[in-house]
Image: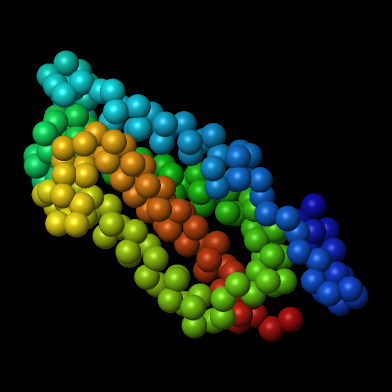
Length: 205
């Protein structure tokens, strides 16, 4: 199947111009908004919006989990401590960070399965040149991890968004899933980006 897809695209490029394969449906199991990704995001949103303020007092498993996360990442409590609901915010922040490797693994698997289609589209579309490809490959994962650290490791909100996550649960329910998705996508998509760098820009056919 993969060889047939690449062969058909190459033939299209030679004969009638670029025949661009369609993107993967976003809501399919292999899409960027797969149920495998939306389900944990939905859980985080519901927990942030409707979880009890004293979540760690009520749920011993959650308390043990956050204690373990703080032992591994001592900075992870800083943002939560500055909120009006520190126990709930700490649980949401810890879950967000813990889910990053899982999101990265799912997205990496998706990108490897979808790689023949991704390669065909990049060969046809050339969305960016070698310099931009190297820049994305180098900076995107670093920026994503810094964004997660800024979300959980820095107390308070920026001055231009004062109280957005520290006093309003809706802000927490928005920022954490977005940061989780971006970090997971940057880390999980990195191997496919590296393969595309060689196959599209460096490999001579």
